[in-house]
Structure formats: C-alpha cells, structure tokens
Length: 315
Image 1 (cartoon, rainbow, N blue to C red):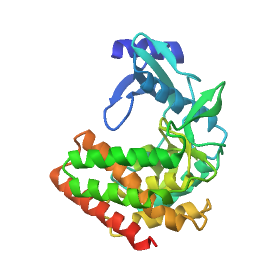
Image 2 (image 1 turned 135 degrees about the vertical axis):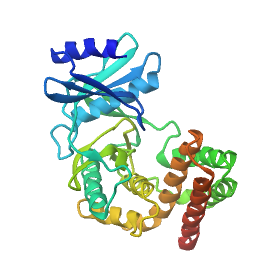
Image 3 (image 1 turned 180 degrees about the vertical axis):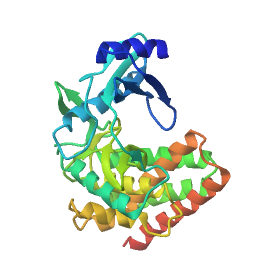
Image 4 (image 1 turned 90 degrees about the vertical axis):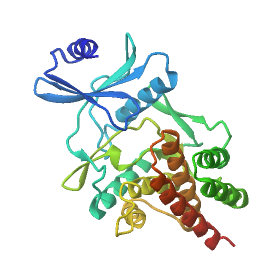
C-alpha cells in the first residue's frame, strides 16, 4: 500500500512522505498517519465498489468542512472533497494533537466531552430526521426509510433483539422485545431534529490535559433527537469504564447541561433511549464476535437492569 500512498502524498502535499504508519484499531476506513515535511496528516481510504463506505467517507469529510468555523475542534482540510484513485476514494486532513480517551476516561474528561456534544447539537437544526448528505457543501437530509425516528428505532429494536438472542443473550433479547412492544409508542415522534454525531465515544474525542482538543469521525452523522444522541454518547463513555466507581452517565449529562438545554421530557425519554442505544451497541459487538462469555453475561445483566428502570417509571 505504501507504493500507492507515496504518490498521493506527493500530489497533495508537493513533498515525499517521511513516514507512513497504518492505524489498525476500531476504524471504519483504512487509515494511515503520514509525516511529511515536519507536519502530520491522516489519510483515509474507502474500498472500490463499496458505495456505502464511500458515502461515509464523503459525509465525514464534508462534516469537517461544515464545522471549520465553529467551536467544534475538527481537523483542518487538505482535500476539500474525496478524491478517486485506483482502488477507490481517499481523503486527507491534518492530524490534530492529543490522544483519544479510549480506556482512559475521568469525570473531568467526561464533562468536557459532553459540553462539546452540546455544541455539536447547536451547529445546525433541520426540518426532518434522517441521514445527513451534502449538496454543494450544504447539508441536506435523506429521511429515514421508515418515515420517522420512532419507527426506525422500533424496526432496529426488532433486529437487535434477534441478534442478542442468536448471540447467546436470549434473556436480554426477549426482555428488549417485550418492553418496546409495550412502551415503544412512548418514544417521542415530535421534536426539533439537530445535527448529531451518532458515534460520540472516547475513541473519537481527543484530549490534552483532560481538555478536548479534537473531535473525529462524523461518518455516521445524522439529523435526529438531541436527547437520543446524548444518551447514546453517555452509554459509549460508560462502556469504556463500566466498572467505574463514579456514575459516568450522570456525569456526562451534567456536563451537557452546562452548555445545552434538556427539557422535562428527558426524564421519561432517557430510560428508553438508554436501553435502545445500549442494546444496539452490544448487538454490533456480538456481530463482530468481540464479546467474551463473561462480557455477554455482564451486558445481559446491565440491559435487564436498564429495562427494569423503564418498567419502574412506566405508569
């Protein structure tokens, strides 16, 4: 691959790369860190023939472009659009400082990250929910095929419950299906959709001295309910330290409230969103065969406890 990367770098940066290092873990796209002429860059590729992957690469880059003049710290752009090469498409951006919060979160990091999620939600509002696309640099929305966020969630919950059951988490899958059959109609269907990261985890937030210095990977961005994106993010941070002696989710919500607003509906929506987004994430890990027997048992217990919270607050 280095034989293909060097000509790309020379074309885009007018200099030969000093070093090329592939980043292996946890990324949707094939990713390389490039050192060139004293500066560092990130080069990402999507595979030839994979339109979904190319769309995600394009969406992520266009989100960086959209966010350049906001309070959200994103990489500076080298290629203003994805470019074609022999095996697909690529994008090139400057590398930000800092390290991700993977396996190293703290209350201060969590609060600071949540503040920036609130700023992301304040960037843009939309008339309808759906997937973010870009036309002439302007974001537009392709509505969810199910017609609304609620119907999309209810369909994915059905798929998630099947995945959990097939993956050895039968009790969690059955309980998930039952609770959403009974309580799914309570999911909000009327709200003001906002720009949502949709993958806001410690893997995608860069820190220096516990301060946020970068936010990455907007490939899954969509227009949705800010409350759901908030709860999904809080779950994502908790999953990086599920044994923490402090309440990660509550700390995340506290940080968010310092910048963003949460109305009274959050108290009733949060338990549903917590179960739905946690189950969806766990099902994704099952499909990738990334959960041990112990982890399956652990997340079954946590999902059942979260489902009990829904039943406790239901009329």
